[in-house]
Structure formats: C-alpha cells, structure tokens
Length: 460
Image (cartoon, rainbow, N blue to C red; front, top):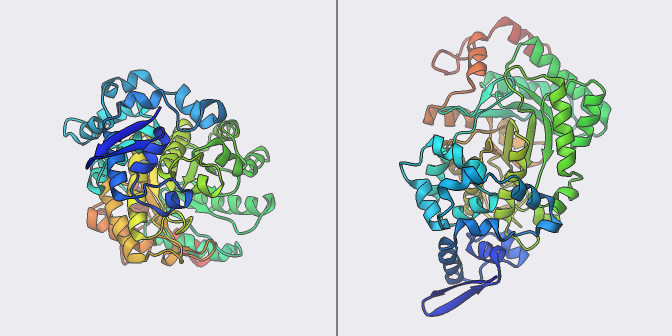
C-alpha cells in the first residue's frame, strides 16, 4: 500500500510505510548512506504531512520489517496491549502529537498508555516534533526501576561510573572508580568495558567490583560489559554478577550480528534472577543501543535508523531492564554527521525510550572524526537534563582512553545537577552523606571523607 501527499502542486508518492517514515525523518547521514533519505526538503515536508494524517491503527496493520522474517516484529506485534492502546486508538499521528503535548496528558496517563504504543508509533510521532516537543513530553514520562537503589524518580539524575582502562589495570580502574565516587557519581552502575578477553579476565573484574561494593556498603550495582554468553557462563560458575549487559538492535538480523536472539536474552535474564542479588528490586538487565547499528550490520531492511532504534527499545522493554542507554554519537559521522544531528538524535532516542516505558539514559558522546565538539555535547547534556534523562556516563575527563571516544565527565554531572537542582538516587545520596562526601543539600563537601572510604582509596 502506498501513500501520497500534494504539496505546492506536486504529488509526492511513498511506496510503503517504511518509505514514508524514512522520508519524514530529519536529515541524517546514515539514512543518506542507506539511500532512503528524502531527496529534498519539500519531499521531507510532504512525507511529514502524509504521516500526520496516518491513523495510528495503521501501524498495527503494516509492518516495516515482515512479521514472518523477523522475531523483533513478532515480539512487538504479539505483545501489543490493545487495552492500553484504547485511549489513542482513534487518533492519527498528528493527533497523537497534540495529545502527548496536552496539559491534560499527565505522567500517569503516559505510563498507562505506554504498553499500547509500538516503537514505530513512537518513532513516527517524534518525526513531527520540534526539539522542545521531544523535551516536554519526555519530561512527563516517568520510568522507575530498582536493583540496589531506586533509579528514575522525578528530580533525580543517576550516573554510570565508566572506569575503563586500556590494559584493565586494576589500579587504574580503581583510581577511576574512587574519582567518580568522590564526585558523587556511581548510582546508576559501576560498569567496566574490559579491554581483555576471556572468562578469567572478566571474573577478576566482577570479583573486584563485588568486593568494593560490599566492603564499603555502596547501594549500587556492578557490570562487566561483555557478551551475554560470557555472563551466563559466569553465573553458572558462581561469579558474583549483578547486572547482565548486552547491546541490542531493532531487527533480528542486526541482533544476530551481535550473536544474540530474544531467547538468549530471556535465558540470561532468568539466570540473573535466580541469583537474587538485588536488595530492592529485580530489574537485572542493562542494554545499550545506538542509531545506525542495524545499517552498519547490513540488517536495516530499508528502514530508517531512528525507527529501528525505537524498535531496539521495544526489545529492551520486554526484558524489564534496570538501565538502557543510547550511545548516541558512538558509531560515527557515517550515521550522525555533526553536532546538530547528534543533538537531534539524542533527544529523539530519549523521547522514544521514555514514551515506550524504558528507563532511558544517554551516553552524550561523539567520535573524534565527527563534526562535533564538547560544546555540542554541553548543549545536548543540558537539553537532556531538562527532559528528565534517567542517567548519563561518568568518564574521567570525559575521554574514554580504552574505547577512544568523547563522553561526559564527573564534572559534567556536577554541572547538570547544580544547574537543574537534580539529586542522586535516594539510597546512594544517603550513603554519600554517611561517607561525608556531600552535605544535606547534596553539595560536595571540601572536608575529608569517612576514614573507611579514604583508607580504601589510598590503598590502591
């Protein structure tokens, strides 16, 4: 079934739903690379106007990736909540935008309708929105998760300590962790991307993180970001695994390029739940995504990268994660060319994830060969803070020396919290006060911290 719209006397035709969605997308280099972007601004506007008139129900009738060929499509279709969809079932995409922006559509309303929204619906409505619209609606969405602390409460921002080291040197990793703790970061997770490979390397890191968290009674969780099969093996071997990590994408073929399937993710979640390591909740999964991953794997099926990113959140939602984040500028300028495209993509990702009920954070980042700089990241960071982002990354100096890209620092988290009055996870904030690192207002103290924390830091 095709679609068309007349604009300025010219009839613009779109072959199918995925073509319409691609042509309505704000310009980005990845869609140009894939050969699916709008050829002109006029064609893009015609596509948006046609999309605005499209009933939401149409997304339940036409799949952008065939149901028979793709288990992600089957997951989205088979788990769709018709009852939750009822309040918006008779709306067009344009009407849906207006409904989302209305003052009468509250946080509770959005939470109730989330199971009825498909990823493609979320992606479609985002294409009709200005940046301020994406911020306003995302700010109203509230997704709260728990493991050893409570993440996603209103007026709070969590931070992942990312203490990567190019040789996995334990002293270097420990120094980065304590640097982050002294700046009041680490309530999302202490998560290491290991440089080495093999279960012995990973096990050493897991045990070191577990010892640190329990020795200092830190209300947080750890993660070693290796392939999910390694984590299943570690759990079977009795290794203290908190969160199970995996990169996920929006198509079955892209996930296969990662060496995963939905059944494998279900197996990993079940294994982690058996450990019962969470003290407050059982959100045991941690996912990372990023626009362009399906295209880079040759697994995009002609679908635009932002719609596929939203489908990745559909995967994440099913497994009830503690954390999910878009590593928005990590893949490179082939997919998001410059600061403007990265900023827009970050706001889209955050909006779509939150609208779908996913606890979404953003790695505000760029690669060194992109047409972007730290001023662009400051802008995106501030906009995401206003939008109520769940968490960001904390990297020493904002420069990841192992993964070789630019992200956000512990100082950036301080900036965002101070400017917007954001607190940390409540349990973690209480621990920081107990350790004499912050005062009752959440501000860093200039005095020496608790002797236990100081002794642990100086012993590395």
